[in-house]
Image (tube, rainbow, N blue to C red; front, side, top):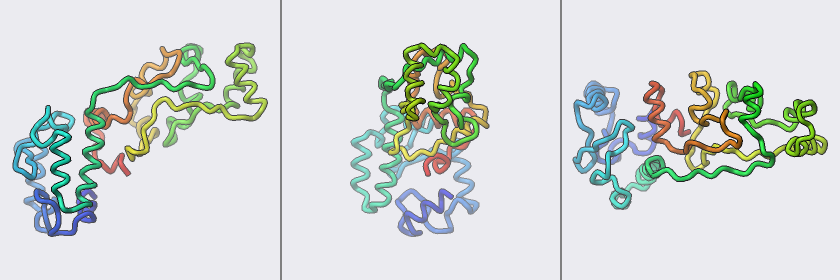
Length: 247
């Protein structure tokens, strides 16, 4: 599939230097498969179009600031290419990689319309999927509805100030506009499937942290960090094919 994708970008004979051109050197023939195996095992060093070795970390990232991998050098290389489609394709990969490799910043905690205490609810015996329906069987994890909250709190501490907000919303048939804590920006073009991760045995706290000890849910990881996702996939022998997530 990756080869077909590359062919759509560049007909045979027009691919950038360093990539196979035409059917005779595709990954499907003996020479291509053998070289791919050597590159994957590390017995043959990967080189860039300038012939320099592209030393990589276990995550497949360039180690340190190797020649040609600084932001300024990448821009210079991109500007020198005559093929605009190849330049745009490479720029997308560079942008995503630099986002994942950059220094972590303090992640903001969004303000919620109701002060929901995760710790209290989990200590009371509620499981994550009781409120976040769809986290195990759906692509997206749902947020608790006002009906679900009101159904319990008609009996449980109905006089609490925050619970009264819930009951007022229920009486007015208004939804609770919860703010998402972990957000993958649209610019990342990532298709994240909760069901696939749940079926693979990934626990909630792997991505969301120890929510059971949080009075206010806050992000503990930058979910837009592609390097962290790739590391987890490789450690657990999951696919790291670009098209699995970027669709």
